[in-house]
Each structure stands twice: as C-alpha cells, then as structure tokens.
Image (cartoon, rainbow, N blue to C red; front, side):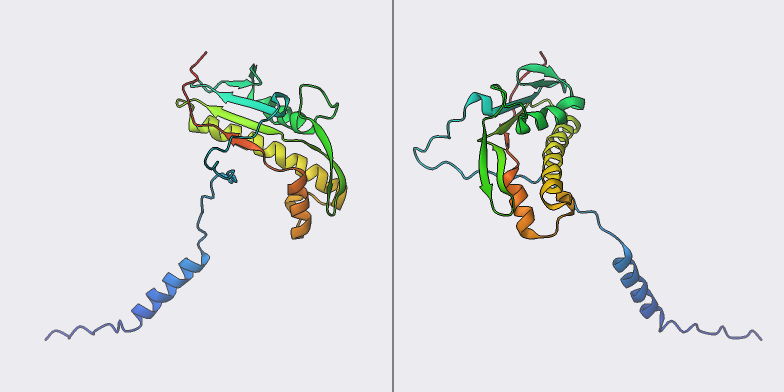
Length: 191
C-alpha cells in the first residue's frame, strides 16, 4: 500500500512573495532621464520684434552634418569649446569682440561685473549626430557651471553646486544666467 503524499501548506507563500516584491521595489533605484534643462524665452506676440543684440554679444557655435564645429565663424574643437565659452562670457580683458561688460548690483553679491546681453547661439545641422549635439551642450553647460562655481567660491566660500541657501543660488544664477539660444536645425552642410 502506497503512502499518501502529504500536501504542502502554501498559505504563507503569497505573503512571502508580497514581502519580496516590496523589498525589491524599495531597494531598486530607477534612472530618471532629466533631459537638458533650458528656460525658453516667452513667445513674441503680435507685431513684437526680437530684441536687437549687438554682434559682439553673440557667441555662435555651429555643428555641421559631419560633427565639425564652427565657433564664431572659425573652425573649432570640442576640446577647447569650454574654455572659449568661459572667455567669451567672462571677457577678462574687456576686448571689443567679446560681450560688453557692466557692473550690476545683485543682492548678497554686491557690485558684480557681468556681460550685458550675452547670448550663446547654438545651431546644428539636421545631420548632426546626437552624440555630438549632447557633447556640445555638455561643454557649454560645464563652462557656465565653472563660472558659477568660481563666483560662488569667491563670494560664499563654497562651490555653486554645493550651495543650499536658495537666496545664494538665485544670486549666482542672476549674475551668470544660462544664455543659450538654440535655432531650428538647418542644412548647414559638411563644408
């Protein structure tokens, strides 16, 4: 006579599976793509014209369909783009071909020398690779972050990226905004 097979009590299996599910949900990190943070200017209304900007206040960066840079109408290199951007926005020698510099009174900072109406104009070709586009964006943003870090260290003794006081963060952002303007992709070509 064969022994009857004992039944396994599976009543607590659902509880164990539920606990494992909660454990994995709590301990797993989820990557969130944040994208590129840019504040767009307000749209022009009616017969409103775009503001006139002096040519010396525009730093033009173009990327062609072969991922080559043209910086201020001269061949450029991604490895020097960050430094060129910092020199443009900082204009330490107050050169005539760089942005006009003005003294601006900013709360918590006092009188700060800032560029007047400086704009970084980024144009890319429809054939530009996404990798190159992001690399250029990263270099431009890194240049602005480095300038902000330098000013925050000078004024508050901490890097901008380490500031926690909202008023200090706003003061640094007012002194060094992100003046990147992107044009609609065009067919620049590979010249």
